Image (cartoon, rainbow, N blue to C red):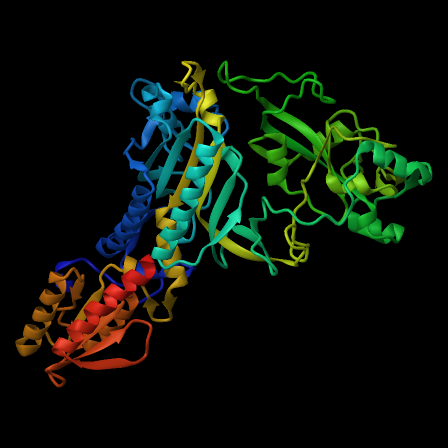
Length: 608
């Protein structure tokens, strides 16, 4: 391909709204252009690399037996209502009506579409297991799209869905997907960190994310210095620095605790203020927060303060859901509540701190004086740390008052005991006891064991060997194609531009003739033709530009191998590997062999 025959409008200046390397370089190197906030168009150069990432994903999916299909991007709203997510996905989901007033969704994800497709065709256990995938457009109406295609509104994802008769079959595909993901990212030249993760709005049980380290990462990763433990902070656990006790054990331990006592704490509300006022430390306090939870799937019929709540049921077989419920969460004063863990424990789509008005209504006290003792208007969820606190201080549900000598089991119990603690750097690893540390990361891929979440609510069945109706299990497996491409640039660039791994470079070789005429043109065209005959992709910079301009553009767009053809060196040519300082002055035949061997060896290295 000749430079003059394609469309590569490179930029010298850094666009004002681009703040990370991939965003800057994708614009400067003419890979894409912005049409609107969060909406980007790929130009020819960018699309070539984008398609190569797609192809790597496609090859690895095909290799494990996944079958590609292409559903529509706009899907009926009815299937989202069947699953129950029409009301729970929030404002990020773009809902539209057609001319007849029917509801449709511009797909933010595809569980409903794939489940509906399989439901209509599935009849027998002989059809399972089945794994289908697509590489298709998604849309999520992000509040603050940023960082280019790293967080855009429209994006492309590979998502696969598997259907199974049993847990063993699901686990086999789940593990195969995990291995395929590792191969995909290796072939793309990426260093990924697989971490345990929360299943979030997708639902389900097992979940693993594939992260890349990033200073602007949306995720905090918890890693161990002593072993391979890695988890998203939303899911991370650590070794307990307390003894987890049953109610009876806690009550027995509290036998020697002094009687509960009210203490005056005028205008003292926060843990820090209490520590200073009472001259003690945060580990002696029970911190109590009031949360509002949305779309709770737990049975609250006998929970304190919940008798008036009416559950909603999207479909006869779907779980009953309480649109809104309030909970008190008690945790040791030096720890923080992990709201993702809390949402998972409550089987809620979202949890958020209650408003000041709701706190005062439910605790009969101003904000800052909540505590679990005597709290009856909401269910009390306590973190496991509270079970080992036989002599604690907590709010007394009255202005300017706290309780001292509070003991779990004696003075209060819990509606639910759970691990809702946020793990932080310095905590001890649950696997080996080593010290945990933090990194920022961006998610590129995520695999889930969905279980029965969608097949139950959407009435998917098959007949087993005995002719009995059964419900299949599901798995879900996604990769962000745009984000993967941007992450390759984040990991592979320098001050001059992109340094593409060979597997995803838009072209393998760029030939730069100093002046494209005469013998230089003849040598250039012959070398390009010979390389293209053996499958090497070549871009010839035939522009009538100064050599310095051509060299800068070659470095900016990051093609792995550069060949300079100049009259003064003929019949030799100058070969340079992008990212290296040294040049090689080689005879024509020698240069041709070197280029072919280097491209093939790099592709093989990334593939193995």
